Amino acid sequence: MSTRAGTLAAAYAACEHDASTHYENFPVASLLLPRRMRPHVAAVYAFARAADDFADEGQRPAGERHALLDGWIRRLRYAAASTEPGPPAMPGEPGNAPQIFVALGASIRAQALPVSLFEDLISAFRQDITTTRYASWTDLLAYCRRSANPVGRLVLRIAGCRDEALDAASDAVCTALQLTNFWQDLKIDIARGRIYVPEEERTRHGAREEDLRAGMMTAEWRQALAAATARTRSLFEAGRPVCEGVGGRLRYELRATWLGGMRILDRLEQSGFDPLRSRPTLGAADAAWFAWRLASWRARL
Image (cartoon, rainbow, N blue to C red):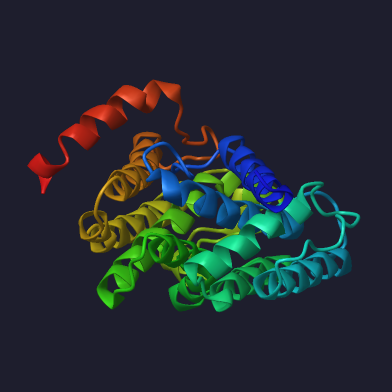
């Protein structure tokens, strides 16, 4: 193996390690994916995970967060255009930042991935730094278009799929996954000063922000969250065709992703729409359920 090939293999291995060590509601570069896709999907995930952390994690001031995202954009554009390694990791960046971009640059070139989709992700993460409330569903869904939908489209491009109907279905699933994460993390987000349930939905049900800040999951908040969950389920249903529109093992990955999101919504509903008391999650105990639902998928179409 040449030095360059060894460097690239190590870079992809670092990205796959990132993908396997973070909790998500859906599989990331799992064994369900075709083997050839896993390194590329892991590189996309590692890029997005680090950038999301710049915007969300720790106690950095806003200016430092923006600077880290600026650097991430520079690294992205450099990696897309050059086979040469980028600069060493800078303060605040993950130590494997150079490896992330060695892998990502190779994937962008090999799979003809649109750099604009990565730039959309960065723009959404940048918005997270300053935007803590959304007035309407229109505003929130516009955010999801940039924060979630690009990932699904990148997975489809890595799979060789370039189809407008599949893109639309993927967008619906990705937006639904993003919304599911918001409802799941209601307690975490309010502690950070954020509320993602749109103001128009809160107002419709009389859900008061001060109650949520006080840790009170009132009947009004439960109603607002029930309505938000129903809207999210509709998006999952609208996006279900993407699980059938792809071939091979990818369809099982997408089915597992779809099922994972719906499972979280089920748990949220079972809790009486009270994520303040118990955050709905997935774990090893769900493996048998997933196996059964995947095996019986066609019977439910």
